[in-house]
Image (cartoon, rainbow, N blue to C red; front, side, top):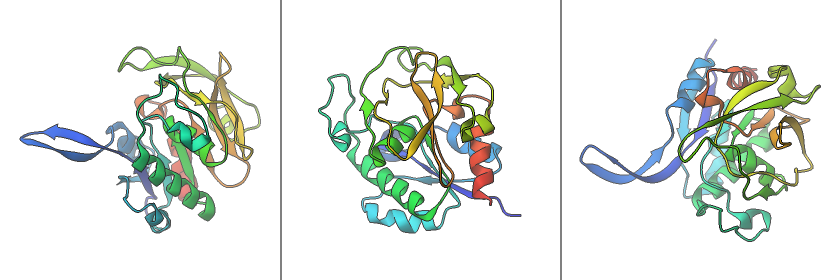
Length: 226
C-alpha cells in the first residue's frame, strides 16, 4: 500500500546559506519529519503567485497541512490591526486560504497548525483575538501548557486525556466560525482545537511537530489513506 502524500505549506522569506542570500521557501524540518514519522510522504507547498493553482495542487494531494507562521492579516476578518499584530504575509494568506477552500470543496483531509487553525477559522467566517499572553515560553522559546479535549469530539477520539503540548502563539480564536466546533480548550478557556462535523478537518492551536506525540498527524495520515 502506498503512503499518502501530505502537502505542507511553507514560509517564503529571505534566507542565507553558504555564499547565498536569496528568497527561500522555508519550513522547520520538524513538520515533514512528523509527517514521515506518522506514515506519510511530505511535499512542501510554497506560496504560489497564482492562488487559482490551489485546486490543481490539492487534486494531487491525499492530505493537507496548513503550517504555523505569521499573523493572519486582520483585514481578512474585517478588523483593524492591533499594534501588537505582526506584519502581514499577504501572499501566504491568499495562497493558504485558496488551499483551504480547495480542500474543503474536495473533502481532502485537512490539518491546521497554530496559524493554520486561525486561518481555517477566518476562511469559514470566524475572527481572531489579536493578542493574548501566557502561550509562549519567551521570545523564540516554546512554552508548554495543558489542553483538555471536549468529550464526543473527533479530537477527543484522537487524544482522550488532558495533555501537555508545545505552544507558541500570541493570537487565538475569537468568534468561532459557524461550521467549526471546539474540540479542546486550555485552562484559561482558549480554544485549542477545532473541527468540522462533515469530512476530516481539524485545527490545533499548538505545535505538535515540536513534541513527540504523533497522534494528531497520524490521524491525518490515516484519514488521507482512506
